[in-house]
Length: 639
Figure (cartoon, rainbow, N blue to C red):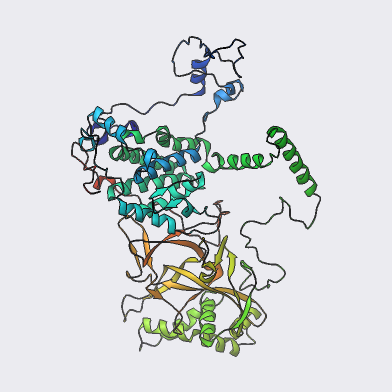
């Protein structure tokens, strides 16, 4: 509570009594205490480290008597770290663990929304606190200790929708554990969440589940809270963005004080307001939170074979592993901890890869392959996409467009369609007529077109992702078939417009087939065949009131039935998304963008550009909440 202290001195929430604890907030944010000030306050504190001495006399153990302390009574102990010479000058004395804070905040939010027994922070005692404070009378209990459900409490139908959404979401390999095992739709309960489950739930899945189950006011505030954790846990943090993030989270916590009871704001919820300052001093949270420490403690625990002597077992296991690690440095051509491949190995096989300059090898197939024959239509569609997306072929494409534009008998849109249909054949004739020209051998083989025999795979690693076809994904608890790409599209203002505009259009699809076509043994290209949602019209893509993008896979485009369709993309162009189905509108799905696990922004130019996994859209709270002395309905009259 009392997060209004961090607001601007002239913010109107400071004068809003009825929406908060009934008082006006005039205090400034608390000052940061330096290490020198802390040392001065605790220098007179005498503390004996270690266990209390055992008393031989029988009877009840007595508490150790504390010495009287002169000065502030907020310190009962002097940290042993002050014996280090640099500790007094350390700017960050207490590192807040984002992992446990996020876990506890997630539990508070989820169990309060579900009103799940003792874990909920909205109970009779919380309602009586409001009555004692004299605020929010619509939430007070009556003489029989009965009270109306709050605006954030889910109804039975909404609980079913909320939990069904969580249970049916499937995510890619290595993204998280199977959260559906923690969901009990029949009893409307959620339990057994681990720390990383709460991390994924808070930053990704919770907004998807509550977008249609809670009132708009509650959704906006909680989505903004999820967006805060998502921004804070980014791999790259910028100081100017952190300053904006701090102002935003203070405003979010103040709006949460309007909605939720005082019992909701435990110490862990309050620590949110200090996380940004910790990030400024300590850097990204990935180097400071408890995930690697917890994993290593679990590894040490696995060394225990004799439970009667756990310390000795851990010591022996640690020495044995260190000895094996040392010996492994002298072993060649054997997989060790130092040369172990990554989880997603997308490095091309140097033995089978070609040396083409046009299409260097990209990615690595997974599993076995089968041979099949390309139909004339498939061959044309695949070859045309390769031609129109090759930088060395682009001058020829511009040449044929200029030739067609010389004729004023047709509009530009008609010319563009004709070029799309005839370019592959025109390019082949052009290169054959100039066999003695200054064209490279790769370009000549490209003009000849691919052979009819092609390879088919079920899985492929590329761009740091593991892609699987829809058929391979069936029956699995994971989803690795979502495809996203931004592709250049030519457009015209009207049928008589000759000024072509070239822009990137986002396309969402699902991977249907993975093929590798061969150009007469010179080089080969891997293509993904997808079923694409029609994102060129509002029937295939839309954005809801909360800023979520939805796509409709009952409205498809480029399905491959016509020669002009383009169902193929190159493997290097693919980025991964996963889809969460809207339980109230089954035809629509929400795409969630991903970034490769090993991708870091090093400030260098990269040939592969990934879609930014931006946080959720920030909403304007001023249009949702009545400031001042106006009343806000915090209860719902239906059960």
